[in-house]
Amino acid sequence: EAPAVDPVVESTAADIAAMRIRGAAAIADAAAAALAIQAERSDAVTPGAFRTQLRVAARTLYETRPTAVSLPNALRYVLRGTDGDSVDELRSSTIDRAETFREDLEDAQTTLGKIGSNRLRDGDVVMTHCHSTDALACIEAALDDGKRIEAIVTETRPRKQGHITARELREWGVPVTLIVDNAARRYLDDADHVLVGADSIAADGGVINKIGTSGLAVNARERGVPVMVAAQTIKLHPGTMTGHTVAIEMRDETEVLTSSERSEITDLEDGDDGFTVENPAFDVTPPRHVDAIVTEHGQFPPESVVTLMRELFGETTTEPWET
Ligand code: RUB
Image (cartoon, rainbow, N blue to C red):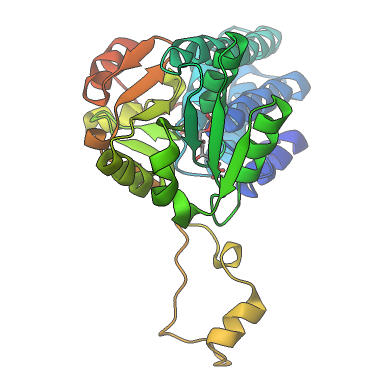
């Protein structure tokens, strides 16, 4: 008999897959919260059944989106810390662990924001891409220090997360110029920084973030504009220390073109083998195009994040939801 996964776990997984919950930090936070609800409402009568339910719930959440490592990092943190000889003990330790994770996530972002804000001077213009809560935390801390900041915000096709960034910045009173992604190079002349977040950071310092980040970083380097990546350590990808690469999520073509747009291009009834739409959600920016990775433990040149990863992760073993 299949173990009961709580409906909240199912709906959280569906929300992550459909991007109603999106952005690496928000995904991790929602996954931890869902595990706590699974624990709270579990009908398991034995510790073994409880653990099995929790593992199945974790796997359901894990299988939603492949690129942001904050998701498996969150699941691992909660599952590895769950401890007890009875269902009640397991229940309360899971809930505590999830709560600690969520509090740490918020604290890390606040600390990171203060550290990152040191790179921003009064009057600076910051170009952003996509919507990153870690990146916005740096701007918020700079504003709290009384610095005046302006922003150039890329629209971020195809899902237009730039609109979320623009709205948040406007709520803080930051003057915003919204541009299409293809205008970024032209507007880099007006920018003092490129500031983005990350879904994963690889051991070699490669930054996996919203599609278009790597091109923006190359252009910024050519224009002499420093590229700053705001990423709390939950974005560090432990598997890359042993040579694994980060899977880039490919999303549905309907995000790129409607069915009527498709039929204007090709109207073959049985489909057209010669026409394909590709929609990668993320890309990899090589470390040489990144000036600094800002974490809650300080700022690092990308090539040195591996040292931090060794300190934080040590040896990695099998995943708790794979047993
Ligand atoms: C979101 C994205 C963000 C990172 C960091 O992509 O690329 O830059 O997730 O966000 P999507 P945060 O919209 O496809 O999820 O700093 O909030 O974790």
